Length: 210
Image 1 (cartoon, rainbow, N blue to C red):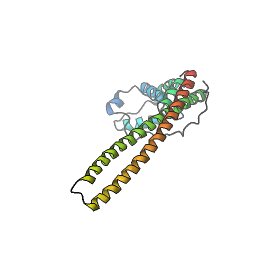
Image 2 (image 1 turned 60 degrees about the horizontal axis):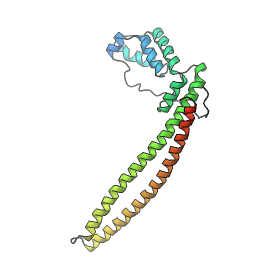
Image 3 (image 1 turned 90 degrees about the vertical axis):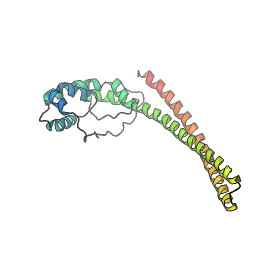
Image 4 (image 1 turned 180 degrees about the horizontal axis):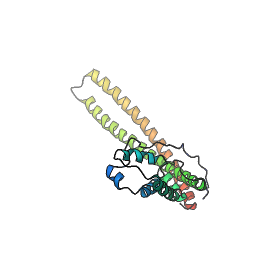
C-alpha cells in the first residue's frame, strides 16, 4: 500500500538492551529455536538477536540451532513486514530496524511512516496537555504563596524592613503568575492547533484503511 502522504523515516536505531541476558538457563535448555526465531522475527529484531541468545546460552553450555532459528525468524518477519503491522509499530512509537526484505520494505515503510506521523501528532497534544497541567499547578502554588505573603504582610509582628521584602516578593509572584498565564494561553492555542491536525490526519489514515 502506498501512503498518501510521504513522511521522512526517522533515523534507524540499532540499539538493543544487549547488557541483559535474553534467555535464562532453563529457557536455553528447553528452547524450540524455530519458535524463538519466529517470535524475534515477529518483533522485528535484527539478525544480531541470535548473537545475544548465543551469548546468554553459552553460559549454560547450550548452542542455538541456527538453521531452525533462521527459518523461524524468516516466518516471523513475513508477518511483521506487513503494512498493517508497520502502521501499528509506528503509531505506538516503535522503531523500525530495516529488517524487511526488498519486496516488503516499500509498503511497510510507507505504512510505518504514516503510523509514526500519527504518533507524533498524538504526542504533540499530550505534551501540550502536560505542559498546561504543570503550569496550572505552578499557578496554584503561586496563589497560595501570595495568600501566605499577604497574611505575613499585615501581621502585627512584621517589621517595616520585612514588609519591604514581602512587597517585593508579592511583585515577583504576580509577575511570574502573569508569565505563566500568558504561556498557558499560548499552549491552549497550540493544543487547539495540534488537535485539529490530529483530527484531520485521523481522517486521512482512516481513508488509507488504518
